[in-house]
Length: 379
Image 1 (cartoon, rainbow, N blue to C red):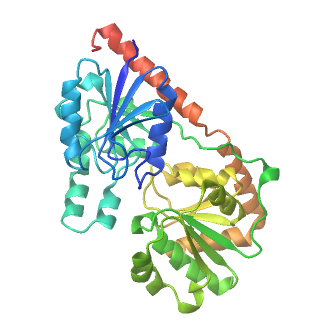
Image 2: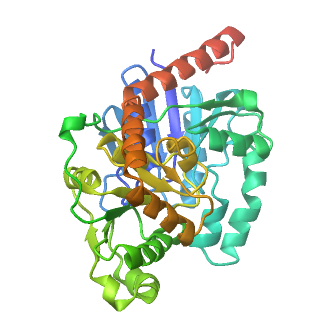
Image 3: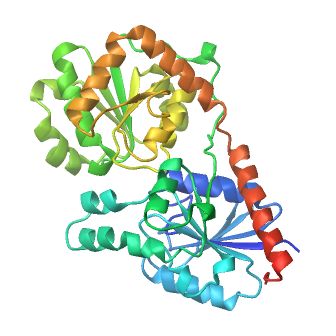
């Protein structure tokens, strides 16, 4: 009989705001689905079925972001005997499984801590409560095995009291095969910077625009491409006030684009800008590297891992627009270094495969279940 794994997460792969964490989760679950019964429980999504199968994973949707916590406990208690392991994914939201799942069956899966995200994205007092309680909520999982995706997050977890011996880092993957060098597209004639992601302050779009305005003084033909859901209100309230009128025509908002167009624009851009304050890894960094484009990142958890502390990209000395602009100038002025960086980044991207991620996850699961069988603690 196949072992059963229950995964609890507040977003699934079909959620409108699904990002790198949801892609990672689906890829590792679908890899083991032929040999495990995989049930993924998350809140209801408007316009989606409450139950569907995707790549061998059974997705069940019930409740809201808040009530799904109760729904998860109810589901677990109703099927406790047949569930071998529970994966509780923490991404600001989590399911408090230490209160009802035995430690030997419980796994915490976390991409990143989120204290800056609470403060930047939400107003007080919600932001205060979220940030102040994160450490204590994480400490609930001190008796749990923990899976994460970067050394930065592993270090953060140790700092809040989770034993290093209980933490395992899974490798990142890519949704496509890195292009051969001869497949790279020609760079744009004029310096072209690219931002891919949500219009959110913590993701760094404000700083990207400020840095671009600075760059225009020295490189008047430069342009900025922005890919991601277009938010007219955010542009009017946040971005236009920091962008001189004469610069706005050189900022191009493309909204959502196909994967093919995204990769094409990545390959044509000079560099990708990813000035986020915190990530689990920074999948977009690896995607850009795979098509021949380096990324400029902040020295932030997850992103420093993705660029190997500046060896596979550009990493700023500070989390400011001025520091970002400095690295933008560097990549335009030192072309020999630029070529070295983008080729080293591309070489590393070829090691990032979802099959490697899935195999590492399955090996870990098999070892975990093997120990439980030896101890006679399986369902």
